[in-house]
Image (cartoon, rainbow, N blue to C red; front, side, top):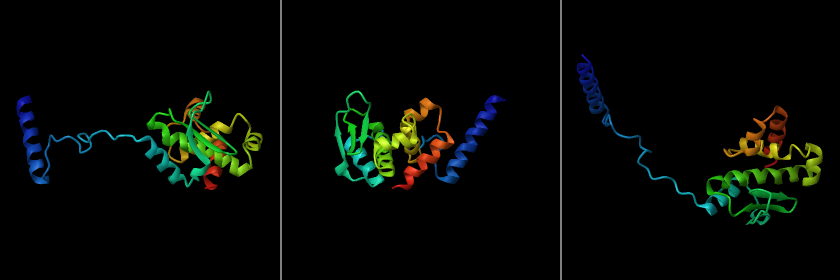
Length: 159
Protein backbone atom coordinates (compact mmCIF):
# COMPACT_ATOMS: atom_id res chain seq x y z
CA UNK A 1 0.00 0.00 0.00
CA UNK A 2 2.79 2.45 0.93
CA UNK A 3 4.68 1.59 -2.27
CA UNK A 4 1.58 2.28 -4.35
CA UNK A 5 1.17 5.73 -2.73
CA UNK A 6 4.84 6.54 -3.26
CA UNK A 7 4.65 5.52 -6.94
CA UNK A 8 1.48 7.58 -7.37
CA UNK A 9 3.17 10.58 -5.80
CA UNK A 10 6.18 10.19 -8.09
CA UNK A 11 3.87 9.90 -11.11
CA UNK A 12 2.03 13.06 -10.10
CA UNK A 13 5.33 14.95 -9.63
CA UNK A 14 6.61 13.80 -13.01
CA UNK A 15 3.36 14.81 -14.69
CA UNK A 16 3.44 18.18 -12.93
CA UNK A 17 7.04 18.69 -14.03
CA UNK A 18 6.12 17.83 -17.61
CA UNK A 19 3.17 20.25 -17.63
CA UNK A 20 5.06 23.13 -16.02
CA UNK A 21 8.42 22.55 -17.64
CA UNK A 22 10.25 22.26 -14.33
CA UNK A 23 12.05 19.49 -12.54
CA UNK A 24 10.25 18.11 -9.48
CA UNK A 25 13.53 17.60 -7.67
CA UNK A 26 15.47 20.72 -8.67
CA UNK A 27 16.96 22.84 -5.94
CA UNK A 28 15.73 26.40 -5.42
CA UNK A 29 17.35 28.84 -7.83
CA UNK A 30 19.36 30.56 -5.12
CA UNK A 31 20.58 27.33 -3.52
CA UNK A 32 23.27 26.79 -6.13
CA UNK A 33 24.31 30.44 -6.28
CA UNK A 34 27.69 31.18 -4.74
CA UNK A 35 27.59 33.13 -1.49
CA UNK A 36 27.54 36.89 -1.93
CA UNK A 37 30.97 38.35 -1.30
CA UNK A 38 31.11 41.36 0.94
CA UNK A 39 33.36 44.22 -0.13
CA UNK A 40 33.95 46.54 2.83
CA UNK A 41 34.57 49.75 0.87
CA UNK A 42 31.60 49.04 -1.40
CA UNK A 43 29.27 48.59 1.58
CA UNK A 44 30.62 51.72 3.25
CA UNK A 45 30.33 53.94 0.16
CA UNK A 46 26.97 52.51 -0.94
CA UNK A 47 25.48 53.22 2.48
CA UNK A 48 26.86 56.77 2.61
CA UNK A 49 25.32 57.37 -0.83
CA UNK A 50 22.02 55.79 0.26
CA UNK A 51 21.90 58.18 3.22
CA UNK A 52 22.95 61.21 1.19
CA UNK A 53 25.89 61.81 3.50
CA UNK A 54 28.70 64.24 2.78
CA UNK A 55 31.81 62.04 2.61
CA UNK A 56 33.97 64.92 3.79
CA UNK A 57 32.43 64.40 7.24
CA UNK A 58 33.32 60.69 7.33
CA UNK A 59 36.50 58.72 7.72
CA UNK A 60 37.62 55.17 8.31
CA UNK A 61 40.03 54.75 11.17
CA UNK A 62 40.64 53.42 14.63
CA UNK A 63 37.87 53.86 17.19
CA UNK A 64 39.62 53.01 20.46
CA UNK A 65 37.53 51.66 23.31
CA UNK A 66 34.22 53.04 22.07
CA UNK A 67 33.02 50.32 19.75
CA UNK A 68 32.78 50.25 16.00
CA UNK A 69 31.91 53.85 15.30
CA UNK A 70 31.95 57.30 16.75
CA UNK A 71 30.18 60.50 15.81
CA UNK A 72 30.78 64.02 17.01
CA UNK A 73 29.90 67.54 15.97
CA UNK A 74 32.79 67.35 13.48
CA UNK A 75 31.79 64.12 11.72
CA UNK A 76 31.90 60.35 12.03
CA UNK A 77 34.50 57.61 12.14
CA UNK A 78 33.87 53.95 11.34
CA UNK A 79 36.45 51.52 12.66
CA UNK A 80 38.30 49.69 9.90
CA UNK A 81 37.94 46.47 11.91
CA UNK A 82 34.13 46.37 11.65
CA UNK A 83 33.21 43.04 10.05
CA UNK A 84 31.98 43.63 6.52
CA UNK A 85 28.50 42.24 7.21
CA UNK A 86 27.96 45.02 9.80
CA UNK A 87 29.45 48.00 7.94
CA UNK A 88 26.17 49.32 6.51
CA UNK A 89 24.45 49.02 9.90
CA UNK A 90 27.28 50.81 11.72
CA UNK A 91 27.27 53.60 9.10
CA UNK A 92 23.49 54.00 9.51
CA UNK A 93 23.82 54.15 13.29
CA UNK A 94 26.57 56.79 13.18
CA UNK A 95 24.57 58.70 10.55
CA UNK A 96 21.73 58.89 13.07
CA UNK A 97 24.11 60.43 15.61
CA UNK A 98 25.02 63.04 13.00
CA UNK A 99 21.31 63.59 12.50
CA UNK A 100 21.01 64.21 16.24
CA UNK A 101 23.76 66.82 15.96
CA UNK A 102 21.96 68.40 12.99
CA UNK A 103 18.64 68.41 14.81
CA UNK A 104 19.90 69.82 18.10
CA UNK A 105 22.97 71.80 17.02
CA UNK A 106 25.46 69.68 18.95
CA UNK A 107 25.89 66.24 20.42
CA UNK A 108 26.03 67.73 23.90
CA UNK A 109 22.67 69.51 23.46
CA UNK A 110 21.17 66.34 21.92
CA UNK A 111 22.21 64.45 25.06
CA UNK A 112 20.66 67.18 27.20
CA UNK A 113 17.33 67.14 25.31
CA UNK A 114 17.00 63.41 24.71
CA UNK A 115 18.76 62.33 27.87
CA UNK A 116 22.28 60.92 27.83
CA UNK A 117 20.86 57.45 28.43
CA UNK A 118 18.71 57.64 25.28
CA UNK A 119 21.22 58.88 22.69
CA UNK A 120 22.26 55.36 21.64
CA UNK A 121 18.84 53.70 21.70
CA UNK A 122 17.26 56.49 19.64
CA UNK A 123 20.09 56.27 17.09
CA UNK A 124 19.70 52.49 16.96
CA UNK A 125 15.90 52.70 16.62
CA UNK A 126 16.31 55.14 13.73
CA UNK A 127 18.94 52.87 12.21
CA UNK A 128 16.49 49.96 12.49
CA UNK A 129 13.78 52.01 10.77
CA UNK A 130 16.30 52.85 8.02
CA UNK A 131 16.94 49.17 7.34
CA UNK A 132 19.63 47.99 9.75
CA UNK A 133 19.51 44.44 11.02
CA UNK A 134 22.35 44.76 13.52
CA UNK A 135 21.02 46.98 16.31
CA UNK A 136 22.70 45.99 19.58
CA UNK A 137 21.24 48.82 21.66
CA UNK A 138 17.71 47.88 20.56
CA UNK A 139 18.45 44.24 21.34
CA UNK A 140 19.84 45.13 24.76
CA UNK A 141 16.81 47.29 25.58
CA UNK A 142 14.38 44.63 24.37
CA UNK A 143 13.04 46.87 21.60
CA UNK A 144 12.19 50.49 20.92
CA UNK A 145 9.66 52.27 23.10
CA UNK A 146 7.04 54.51 21.53
CA UNK A 147 9.01 57.53 22.72
CA UNK A 148 12.20 56.12 21.16
CA UNK A 149 10.39 55.50 17.88
CA UNK A 150 8.92 59.02 17.86
CA UNK A 151 12.36 60.54 18.35
CA UNK A 152 13.87 58.14 15.81
CA UNK A 153 11.31 59.17 13.18
CA UNK A 154 12.31 62.80 13.70
CA UNK A 155 15.89 61.87 12.77
CA UNK A 156 14.64 60.25 9.57
CA UNK A 157 12.76 63.43 8.65
CA UNK A 158 16.00 65.43 8.81
CA UNK A 159 17.38 63.73 5.68
